[in-house]
Every structure is written in C-alpha cells, then in structure tokens.
Image 1 (cartoon, helix red, strand yellow):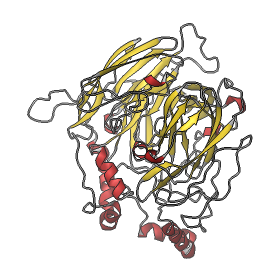
Image 2: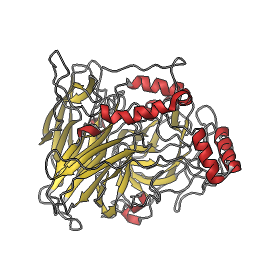
Image 3: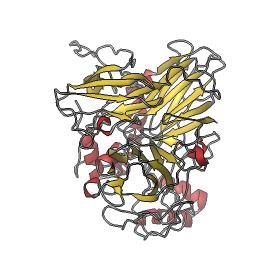
Image 4: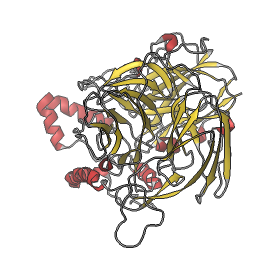
Amino acid sequence: MTIPSRAGRGAVGRRRFVLGGGACGAALSVARPARALASAILPPDPPPGPPPSLLPGQVPTLSGTRFALAVEQVPVAITGRRALATGINGTMPAPTLRWRQGDSVSLTVTNRLAVPTSIHWHGIRLPAAMDGVPGLSFGGIAPGGSFTYRFPVRQSGTYWYHSHSGFQEQTGLSGALVIDPPDGAAPRADIPPADRDYVLLLSDWTDVDPADIVSNLKFQSDYYNFRQRTLGTFLRDTARQGLGATLRDRLAWGRMNMAPTDISDVSGIIYTYLLNGRPPGANWTGLFRPGECIRLRVINAASMTLFDVRIPGLAMTVVQADGNDVDPVPVDEFRIAPAETYDVLVRPDRPGPFTIFAQSEDRTGFARGTLATAPGQSGPIPPMDPRPMRTMMDMGMGMDTGMTMPRAHTPPMAMPAPPGSTPGSSTSPRPGVEVQSVAPMPAGRLAEPGDGLAGNGRRVLTYADLRATCRGTDPRPPARDITLHLTGNMERFIWGFDGRKFSEAPPIRLGLGERVRFVLVNDTMMEHPIHLHGLWSELENGQGAHRPYKHTITVKPGERLSYLVTADVPGLWAYHCHLLYHMEVGMFRTVVVA
C-alpha cells in the first residue's frame, strides 16, 4: 500500500512551494519526528476499531548454514499511517543472518509477492550465478516460485543483503549479514574483544510510491528540496561578503542552472529515517554495563541517504570498513553512504545514556537510537548541524573561489593520470542532454570528510585514514586503466557513466585474472557510492600495499579517485551507483569477466 503523490505540471513543486510558503515546509520537517513516534511492524491481521497497539520492533537473528526465507508484504505504520513494506519472514528489516567463514550456506528464497523478486548478497565473494541480479546472473524469482542460493563462505565481517528487483529495497527489503571468523581463528591483537555486539541498520522510509518519486524527480529534479536559498539568505550573505560578491555568486550558479543547496535528491520532507526499522521516536535501545566494550556494526541500507553518524559523549574507533579489517582509527563522527558498512568500538565508562545520532547529509532529518544501562532510558538528542552548501570544489573547479565559474558546458581540461597509471581507455564525455556539466579540474578529495563535516570541531573519518591490517593479496601492477566519468543531467534527472545510460552502454570487459585500475571522475555535484559486484575494489588512498579493500566507494562531487581490481571470478557482474534512483535511471554497467 503506497500513497501516490501528484506529479506533472499540476503538482506543487518545491520551488513554487518555497515561494509560496517556505514556513510551511519547515513546519512539516519539524512535525515529522512527532508523527514518527508510533511505528513498528503491525500484526498481520489487525483487529477492527482504533489503531492497534504497536509492537516494539526487534530484528530476529537466524544462524546456521541452511535458511528458508520468504519474501512477502509486511504491514507497518512507520509514520502512523498503515502501509505495506516488503520484508522477509514477516519482518522489516529482514532477519539478521549470521554465518561462519568456512561453511557453505544454502538459502532457499520463496517469493510470496505478486511480482518477481531477488536477493543480492552485498559484498559477498561468490559465483556469479549466486549473486542475485536479475537479467545478469540469474532470471529472478517469479511470484510463487523459489530459488536456492548455494555458495561457500570465504570471508568474514559485516555485510548486508537486499533486493535487486525494482524498488523493493526502498520498500524495506534489506537485512544485515554478519559473518564470524572461522573456528579456531586467532582474535585480532590490536583491538579488545567486544562484550556486546549490535547491528545498526540505517534506512530511509517513505509512504510514497517509489515510482511516483522517480516521476516527480524526472519532471522537476529539485521536487523534494524545500530548502533553497531565499531573500533572507541573500541579505545574510550580502551582510557577510558584500553585495557584489553575493550577486556574482548568485549569477554564477544561475548560469549553471545549479543550486548550491542541491544536497540530496530525496529529503526528509517525505523520508522517515530508521535505525533497525524504527523511527526516531521509537528509540531503538542497546543495553550495556559501564566499562564494557561494544561493537557496533553500522550498515547504511538506505536507498538515497548519506548519514553522518556520531555518539555525543563517546569516542568511536573504526576497526572495519566494508567487512574488511583496518587499523584502528579513533573518530568522533563518520559519513556512511548507501551500501557501505563500518564497524566501530565504543567503551562507555559511565551509565549514560548515550544517543546514537545519524543525521542525513542534507540535515532534513535523522535516525536515532540509545545505548543505555536499562530499558526505557533516552539520551539527549543534539541539534542537527547546519546544512552544507555545495561549493566550487563540488563543481569540479579544483578550489572554492566563490567568484568565477565557467558555464556548465565548459569543455573539460586534460587531467593528469594518477602515479603509476598506464595508458587507458579514458574518453571525456561531451556536454549534451545526458551530460549537464563536466568538471574542468577534478581533484583528489580522499582526505576530506565530506560536505558539511570539515571544521566542525570533531574528528571525522576520511577515506585517507583507512589502512588495511594486511597487505593486499595481489602485488601486480595494473595492466591498464579504465577511466569512467560519472555524469548526469540534474534538470532531467538522467544519470550514467560517460554520458550514457545503461541501455546505451556496452559492457566493461575484463580478462579472467587481469589486474586493472578503475579511475572515476565525478562530473556531477552529487556523491555517488559506486558498487562493483563480485570483486574487491582496492582504494588507492596513499596507504601503499595496505590499500583498504572495499565493495562500495563513494566519489565526492568534483572528485577523481582510483582503485585496483583483480578480476578473479568469471561471469557477468553489476557495476552501479548505489543511490537507488540513480541506478534505476541509468547509472549502471555490466562488467564481463571472461
């Protein structure tokens, strides 16, 4: 059950909304957490009469080697309004699966939906036929049908799983996946053992039909951005930097048909942000005793939202990224994009309670939970940080002058290749319908925490901090470079690689056993978490042979980065942006390893 929203020219777009009643938008944003106080999975057959009592949401854990999973609709009331989520075995999020490295698992997935479904095991190294992408590795699971995934488990760490069919991920079909080290494996000597172990699965929920969201974005790409600059911000900027500079800034952004307030395509105006399926008011709680070491496995299962995570009053130590061990990094905060995972350790030395605070990148809402010594405790909720604003760095200008900007269709400048690169397959996209802008001076930004996080007084994780605990297993240099531009047209909500949508693009071909370097250049002003199925991506972040292994790498606006890939498993693999709507409209490629 979803709620259609008005689309097309009859709809009240966000720009018209701001002109006519921006205060109302602010009021809606404030009101949303209050509405979200009541939320959980509802009984399958709610009795007639007043709204039913809502059950405290708990995510079950299934352990072992054989699993029976039924994909089905699950009644929920996330916002207080009845809706149908897509869950597994009657729960949303889906059950947490606990495997052990060295085992072989068998998972029979039965489809109780009226439409095809699928399960993709995100970040898991497995045969291509078990990867779960309809149209590539298998045919999908028809309504009423079932499919059994079988594969050996060759890794440990924190991962997750989700549907790769339509918008089912947006409607709730995702769950955590925790893989323990093999029996007899020595524990890590560089970190203390954890007394408690919690999964924190972040997501974004909407009662609106996802197809409507895409339709609205295609019609008006800033449809859900109600926080444009106004007369008030113009006056404030004029007072701070002068009338001339303010006018030049406004005119420059206008010439590009861009807005520095474009942070997220979909915002808290229709999203409720969840922690383990629970909205902020429901306050998911994890218990502890003072002095204990707690491992938090943070998974971003959101469709479109980057979160900034912190626990005020507690320092965190990052010990794993995307399921792979990294040298401990003490931080106060980290940004996590859709599909990424980070494991952190915390050790509260007093009763607290402590709030787990995950604010959306655009600061239109947050997910929240509590670490407490007793049920029912609630930690203080900090105010959200100021919203970030895009800069000239985000437009690929190389530095934020705040003054001069070329037009959007400026031809790209030649860019230096990264150290050690070999002649590659780089082609620069041409500005056009599918390429609204090309970054003239993309820059390395791995040491930056991300828009809105620099200089906030907290230690914030950067990609440059990640150092694998072990040297990479393949010391060979890459045989060639594959350069891809991340491109799009904000106005038409078109996304792709090298100015081509998936339907227009040939596959990327790798030889079995080949070692290659992928170079990504983000020509857009949006972050893109790029996920390569089936193969590891070794981020070249200055850590030498201790490059961190990741399955999803977020490319900042105007950024150029690179990573190495060993094509050691044959088959057809998906390669795409993990912002669901970007993928659905074209930012997707097939990688063929043969």
